[in-house]
Image 1 (tube, helix red, strand yellow):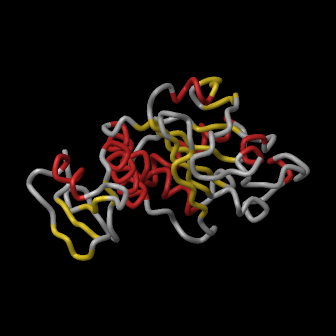
Image 2 (cartoon, rainbow, N blue to C red; image 1 turned 60 degrees about the vertical axis):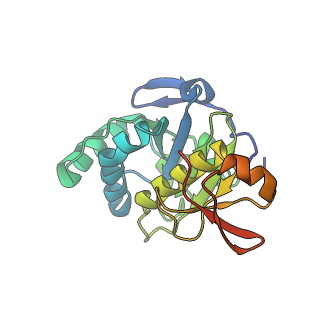
Length: 219
């Protein structure tokens, strides 16, 4: 199945470091962040998991659950978590999916559906495409997809920024401009007429061009 923004996120059942889950049931009515790793005990991913462990409360405060995936067995994840806490200073408290049969990686198009073998026969290099980030909305639709190269650590502050933008723009008829940060001015979407905007934004806005109207971020 081809994955696209606003398509339903594929559901699955899987073993995790916190027991077996049905992904959609686990998400419930919350936002979700699913991020994947090509192999346990890899250096860049170790730093990423540690940083995310320290940032998890920020995602939780935005009603967003965090779940990791690595193409290895759950037992390996538990051992890796000890290294992560020791070297990065944060304990991994969110669940990590075990995907030794590559089921979830294939379901989310991170590996071809006909890719042979299991995790025991593969290296991180074989799994280079399993370095993706998905943000999923409460409606179970995919809101963001990003895939990173092996040697580039992911910027989870940026992913948090994108989540702020998506939650804001889901609530109000606005968009966020380049390099926007929470609390800064936003853009009134073109589908909102000036007459409608008067009701939505009674304090007014700055018209730069008829299609580019900046306004203070709504609550």
